[in-house]
Length: 248
Ligand code: ADP
Image 1 (cartoon, rainbow, N blue to C red):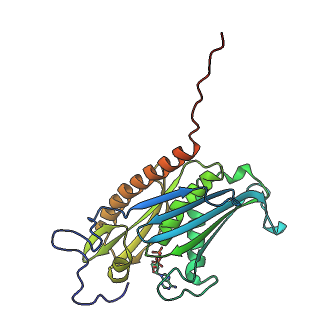
Image 2 (image 1 turned 90 degrees about the vertical axis):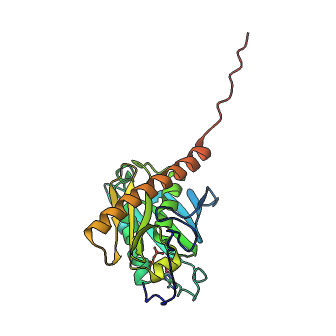
Image 3 (image 1 turned 60 degrees about the vertical axis):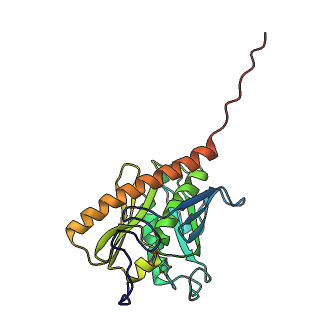
C-alpha cells in the first residue's frame, strides 16, 4: 500500500477495474495437477499473472528425529519467492515476510490435515512463487490444497483462499498488483469447504461494516475457487468404468 498517483483511477465510474473485472470477480485461474514426477503430489497454478508451483512430500519419516511428534505428523510449509518472480529482484532465502506467510499458511491447513494418522512423520509442502502479481499467499494455498489431495494426504476437505480489499473507497475481491500497491486495504482469507475460516490477515484500515461486506465477497470467491479445485481433482482421479463383458 503506497501513495496513489493523483491521476490514477483504479475503478471507473461504471464500476470496472483496470483489468476489466467487476468488484465481485476473481482473476482467471488455471490449474494443472501432478506436474512433478519426484513429488508425492504437485500442482501448478496460474491466477491472473501469478504463477505458482507446489510440491508435496510425505508422509515420510521426519528428520531430524527430534522434530518428530509421537502422536501425529508434523506439517511443514515453506513459501519461497524465486528471485526473478518480481520486478525488482527478490533477495534469495527466507525473509520476515516469507517466514510469516509460511507460518500462517501451515496453520490454515492444520485443521483439515488428518496428521494424527501418521505419527513420527513429516508432511512437507514446498511453494515456489515463479511470478508474483499480488495475492501469492492465497494462490499458493489454493495450489497446496490440490497438491495435498494429489499426494493422497487424508484431509477433512479442501482449503480455498481469496483476498478482498478496498480500492478507491470500494470493497473489491482478489486485488491485482496495481490495486494492492495503491489500494487502501488488503484482507486475505482462507476457509474450509464448510466456510470455517482458517486464515485471516489485514493490511490497511477497514470499518466493521466493510469487513462484513468483504467477507461476503470472499465467500463467493472461495465458492468459485472450490468448484475449480474440485473439477480439476475429479478429472485427475476419475477412472473410467470399464464395461464388463458378459461371458455366455
Ligand atoms: P501477497 O503476494 O500474498 O499479496 P504481499 O501483500 O506481501 O503478499 O505482496 C503483494 C505483492 O507485492 C506480491 O504478490 C508481489 O507482487 C510484490 N512483492 C512482494 N514481495 C516483494 C519483494 N521482495 N520485491 C518486490 N515485490 C514484492
